[in-house]
Image (cartoon, rainbow, N blue to C red):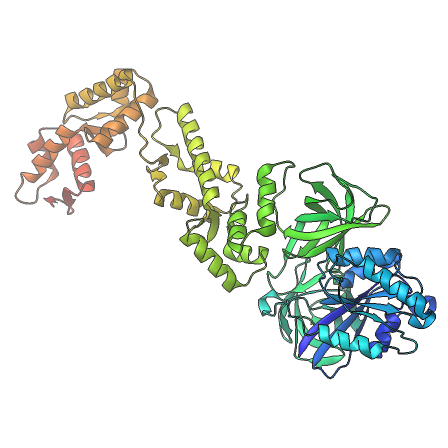
Length: 631
């Protein structure tokens, strides 16, 4: 069966609750205080029986200005509205307020019910109908059915019901995939023998008995024990139904109105929201930068500071990109609608849409920030994913899937296309970054290494740990696997070269002065002069009396170019002497001893042992216990 949720809206005492009772037979005022005062205080729920094969849930909202927060907890999940205007009073303050709220929440369809027609004469009713049509001109209710009704006499109730049935034929915009399941909780209570029960409008997805879910933003893990829709037990519920869910693993006291029951990663838990905020055209209030406001999203209310990103204030009818810095976390999804009310006095002043549920903290009046929000507002999924992968944080695909409110399969297609177009890079740990972000990172990396070389002109590269530390600090990378994956990718792309204990920009070579090169020649000459009779590097350094760092650099250069060979720690030899030692070993046609090699080379036992150990390491000879053989 097709599932539809409709909501009422309109001024207090215009007959919303009586109208629902006439349509459904259900009195939605369940509280004793509501009966006593004759006004709706809390959300009420009903369903309209019909023969057309629809599940039609109804949310009755309070009309009184004092209970607007309760109205907001339920109205956001509806498919269309039955907007109520009493024939004896016409357009009133909450008529206007409710209507602007509906527009801000993106409600795009409805029926206008002019109630209490039994209280006015025909001439008055005709004049009132003209007033109503004029008021809604240019809005989503222009041209929609206007039905004069009387809940007391039953006049035109069936006509209104027929119009509601016709509206139920509208295209279903709700998504029914299980991984997107979420239900904003508007009531929580306990039932004897069952335990904790939550209710709400099932916005997206499917839930079944036995499902393991989460209560966000608290991160509580729960399991579904039972489900009811419209008062009947069922094994599962689907998007578009008013649903009561019996939960295990949680107490009533652990859950609040405004929490969201959801599948894993179906919502983002956040303390900041990037939004497009529009101030109601009817308000005389101005929102200043840094204003404190009440924010309502789903069934949640939270205080927040308004950071207007491109100006100092927002007046009636104006809209702008805004960052809302929340005083407590919310569980939302990109594209969710919200309402803003002044902190004091609590007056409804505007609303808008969430563009980014997990944004970076922005500075004001930054062109790049504003351009990014423009992409978040109207860009393609590929554009959004590329933008998010270019932010301060490194993200993985499943995180992007959640942030953008997509299915895994949808995100797979987006990432595949971006990788193919070289707009996205995937590291071996699964992290994603945009090509633009990689370009910024590469520029920063080159600056880091060049700065190091300015301070250490003789170094052939930057020590690995120092580079990793700088990357960790500059790019806020706490994950060691990510850090290693990033360096590996930089080497794969030919940006970096591994030089043992250091990393260098590809092709980097130290530029030495003539004086430094002269030292190099002296070192080479010294080793050539020593020949087979080896000297320790400290002894050579002492003879030349030069800077130790320069000596070590020049010695390393000589080893790299092959003029000098390293035999052991601190022991080097000229390449000609090494060639002489190799020739001596190869002159033996059979296994030979240390003494025989010593005599052949014409040196002492100490030096012969050093030479043979070096030949073993270089795979020229192989030690067999008492003798050696040439390989």
